[in-house]
Length: 116
Image (cartoon, rainbow, N blue to C red):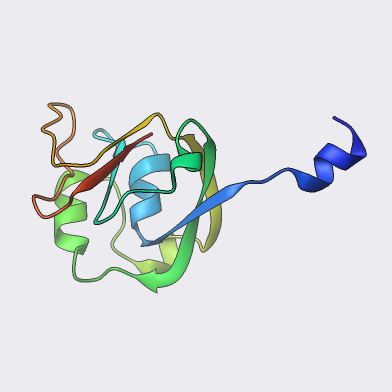
């Protein structure tokens, strides 16, 4: 890679409230492979690698559901680091709720799913 192309390389980052990043990147029996969002991602993100960032905020409200799906995880915010946690390839996007048999993490209210 030349110096010119290295300086213009772009990486996309998706920030998530903790402990959601752990559901993708930690060793759990039922890892999360689909991210649910209310609107679609920019089209240039599809087919790209995206870095996942664990934000400062902790999702206490959804913690019971997270722990029900991944009981191996801790409910203590101190056990979930802040910062870049991993990367995933964005393989596709669905603009409607699609039933994916391997995915139990989905929300009925979500319109868009990113498949990593």
